Amino acid sequence: MEPEITPSQPEAPLVGNDAAHAPEIVAPSLGERFFHWMNWTFYGPQGLRSGWSALIWFLLLGLFTAAVGFAFQLFHLVDFSKGNNLTATSAFFGELIGFLALVGAAAVMALIERRRILDYNLTGLRRIPHFLSGLTAGFLALSALVGALNWGGWLHFGPVALSGAAIFRFGAIWAAAFLLVGCVEEGMFRCYLQFTLTRGINFWWAAGIVGALCLPLIFHSKGNGVWGVYAIALLGLFPCLWLHLKKIPGANFWQAAWVTSTIFGYIHTNNGGENYVGIFAAALIGFAFCVSVRVTGSAWWAIGCHASWDWAETYFYGTADSGMVAPGHYLTTNSSGNVLWSGGTDGPEGSLLVIGVILLLLAALLVIYGRKRPAAHPVELASG
Image (cartoon, rainbow, N blue to C red):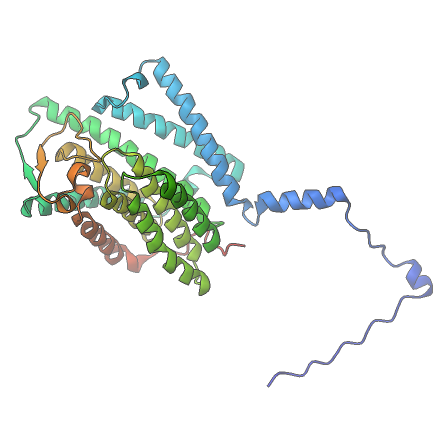
């Protein structure tokens, strides 16, 4: 039964001196309305809206990459004319370009948004222990994948490729290069983009971005594992829609994770040796890294895991990675048998077994850190 509501009495009109002293209501001018519209368009409760932040950051990243690349070319640290002639040293300087560009773009955005660079998912407790445990987890996970492939007869070990001081020299150079890889790729996707999109995205924006990624692939791309992008896009659609309809607190974090993971898979389609399993695996491990941000409170675990996974795959075991076997690797391996299990030119990341390893990695994250989840993400606010 609804409570009774006593209707309010209409106010008596102002007369005489009261009317003369009544405040005059002035309609806002055209300029004031335009200023209000512009302010609403670019700024929200948390400052510059996340979409504009992401766009400006992408532009800055491109400008810094071009500038640093030009400087490195000028001082003969890199030689872009050699194309894909990859060495351990060229890989290091190539990744250093990306790292310096990322730090530059993030520094400018931190100044614009009145934040610190560490605010982009790099704060939190136990950062060093999380980074070290990520390093351990990445190496063990890749080793488990290689071991399973060897046990199944889809990967075979050959002779050791290095000896003496070369083992340590190449091991150190590749470790530095892949540490930069972890910093750059996690800095882009699990730090700046994940943080920025979380503070301003909703389901419809997320669906629009994912759809915009898939649409050109449908019409223009015929290979390099594009079905892996479609798979992760579809896999995230219904859970994110359910979170939106149920108005679950923190839904915007997972909608941002759907977007950043799909983009992460998408950029790997540019690699020549990818298959759809490898692309899906890249997007899936991107999601696992988002989960690590959620349960540990920062991206340091993801940075460590990413770096050691790539180091173990490329240097220590010497397996193919997206069609490339890098020079200066320690062990040698060869794949054989059904491509779905061996991974073919993609290497271990293109094998169906990688999905099981990533799911085990995800389960380990939840078991170890899930019950110690930090307080709600600082930007987990409902999107307007």
